[in-house]
Image (tube, rainbow, N blue to C red; front, side, top):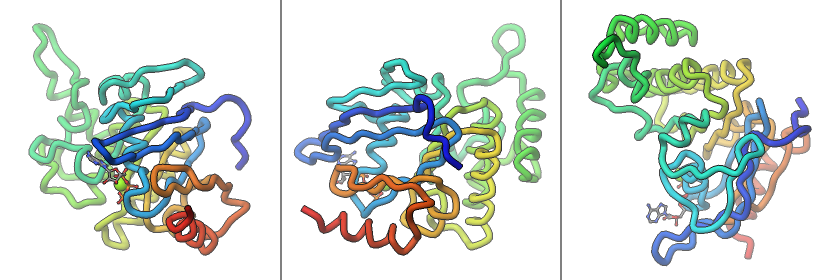
Length: 250
Ligand SMILES: Nc1ncnc2c1ncn2[C@@H]1O[C@H](COP(=O)(O)OP(=O)(O)OP(=O)(O)O)[C@@H](O)[C@H]1O
Ligand SMILES: [Mg+2]
């Protein structure tokens, strides 16, 4: 599907990032259109996670600008990102493992009764509804997240994005360390986001997973964007070649 018309949902312009002496991002331009899924690929250390962590407020760029729905924005914290409608699903950091499923879904946005007391009943009911909408049946909203499988954890994070009507969901290696069945579940969660018209950035080393789910691919290597190709103009094999060639290019 062609969705390149109109203005991007997010546009990152000339992003530079240093970690001490490590020049992690060297002037990256990156955009995501409304309802579009972009596969962000490239070798280890290419700068993929750094780029999306700037978008989700975990890091600040040393130089460059971010536009969201056409407006220049400052994203100084994960909270700022969430306020804009940017949700991030990391393998490790997205959830608080010892808190319950319901607490994780509401994290910082808990419904309150009078006197500011958290309304656990509403929270539990809405959590179960959000998970059921995703086709995920978990025994109880009170279970701590540590007791869930990797795929289920991704599901909880995605249910949160759907419940709070995120505009952009970022998944960084969501299929790492998952069983084949769980991978299929996670890809199905992403399809659900797509059906809701939510934009997605999908980072993976598995080009078949990326190819399955994304409409466009951005290849990074050593802090730079090396290629930007639409699915209809490429194949998993060609993407693999692009990743390898980019890693060795000068
Ligand atoms: N917090 C940090 N402190 C210091 N250096 C960092 C930090 N985060 C990333 N880097 C460095 O920045 C560069 C880009 O790392 P980044 O994690 O963005 O790569 P990546 O493309 O996500 O790689 P991978 O596919 O292995 O996850 C690497 O050289 C990395 O070592
Ligand atoms: Mg990474």
